[in-house]
Length: 417
Image (cartoon, rainbow, N blue to C red; front, side, top):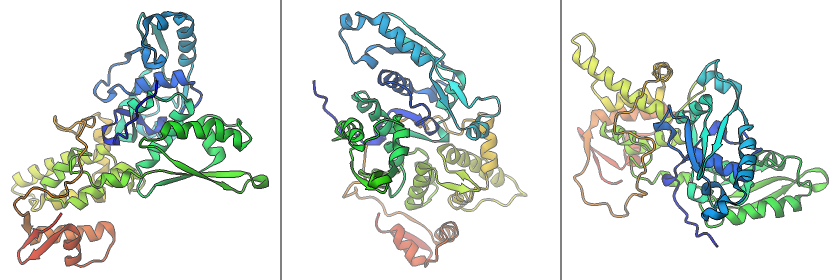
């Protein structure tokens, strides 16, 4: 039976794989990979203390006929559980020490206990591995569970995550990678020494499975190896990252609305969205992340209330400019990390990283609305901060035009989006 594929936008994806786990274990067979994907698909962020999960057999066998599932099931499931229980995830030691502390091991047997019942696997997750699944603020890549369930090749799963992780970066409508590095990432290092074999048994089947989806690609080969052999492969695919810039504020992160409410210009918010998505460096090796933005907003709000209620402290005149400065200059990084280590939750009740937003682009003809206006002083402060943060030399008029504003004496009025 053929599977109908939909080119679903990544905004609707439900699988969250921490980046540190991508390629952490390339030994898993197809049925193990399916089981692992179903485990990733659980909402671990909302259930940080839950270690035991049930996965229906048909999720990994793709068979819904109960008689077919039960036939020879004991022997097959016993083989699967024995293999899966032995899978070790080797992780970066410095990463683990930095974000989890000395007690967390760099090599983890992720699923120490697996039992099989009448209709499902019962899987216990190692508590250290669970901690990694919970800390999505350290960087994650989203996947489409519906598409992943259709793959019939193990290599398809592995290349899928490699491409999806790459697609979140700006200006990356192609991926150039060495042939041997690609084989290592796919888990077939040392195999398919003749490129023609690699092409027909790995690349072409994956390309066919990806066709018509968000990760569909074309590729070209670059020669330069011994005897003119293929040395590198360049994958060409649609760059969805640039399309995120067209999403309405709030469609990618809830804090976008908060920043807009403090009169931070939408284009500055889009830049912050971009930095968070690509985990760009902020200061001294520290990288932008979702937790950081939420935490800074909370800390700035507390500072605002404290200063404005104190008779001795200098009040904050422009909340938006002050918040923007704190975010982009990284002055609160240490306090944010103190909050993180203490397990503090920076989000308010309505903020949820797993919220399934509507897939909306800015309408071609927005509904009429009252013209937005702000004071010239507020605009001037944001203008100066923009020049300082982005290290650019531009006039007030050029910055106003870039944002769709016009300067009218003591006021700045928005004339276009």
